[in-house]
Image 1 (tube, rainbow, N blue to C red):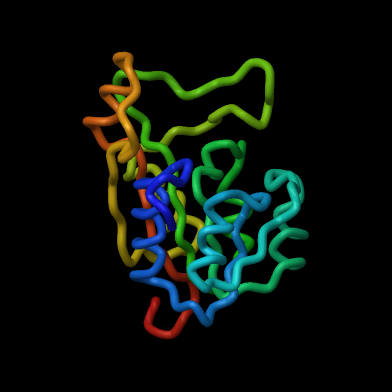
Image 2 (cartoon, rainbow, N blue to C red):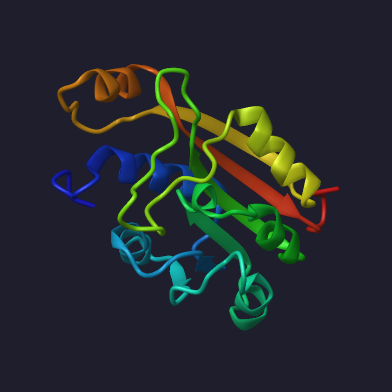
Length: 180
């Protein structure tokens, strides 16, 4: 991936985390419509399928039943759902690589009044997200926190997000040999 990619360093860090834990022979379902990151995963040799814009709060059973996969990825998606527990519980086995924005003390959750799909219903503390995963049957294998790794933008909030961890990445497994 070139260094001039729209989310440069953030994408590279995400791809490195993915490469640490997921083999390129595994079928990946990326929860979300096709995007620059799923394209970068495909360019790195991963077999990636994206969902088609389903409402994961309402259609979580249909999504999981309709897209067989060995691994599920979700990058900054669960914070948009009213009930992320449902889709996480519905996945019966496999691997999960996901990231969520961290709740930070200096900012309230992101909210776009003009677009209901561009709102954060949740921003998580790591322990809250860990509990959500564990309660829905996942075993966390690895986790990392990152400050916003991309170019600094002017303003107090961007400065603080550049300094303090603002993303939480998790690799988890469910019902795999050795995952109990």
